[in-house]
Length: 120
Image 1 (spheres, rainbow, N blue to C red):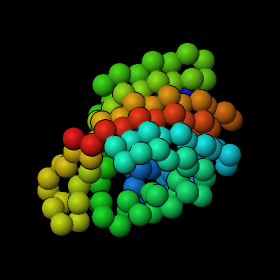
Image 2: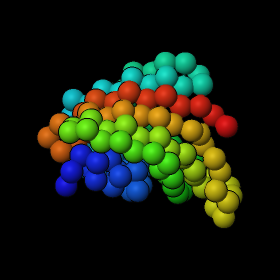
Image 3: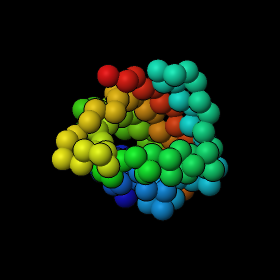
Image 4: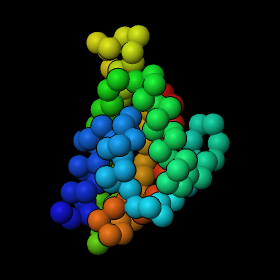
């Protein structure tokens, strides 16, 4: 699987709301620098899995629509919109936010991420 195929597969999966699936995609030494509407966060393996566990409490489905993806060797840039379905309203897609991420792939896993997001 190419680095680009890995990233596409990752976003098509339920990894963003299922920590067990997430473990299949992330490198043990993962680090994410994330600038978002609330400020800056730095995530490692444990804090990322903790975040995903928290998300799984309120959301029953996650869907990502990739609008742009560019690959160069083991570096992938992706722009996407993230939708979720909540426990309270499982029939409606709710826009969670707009995202831009740059991923470095190492050992066929997401290794280093730089992400920017904005709430709608």
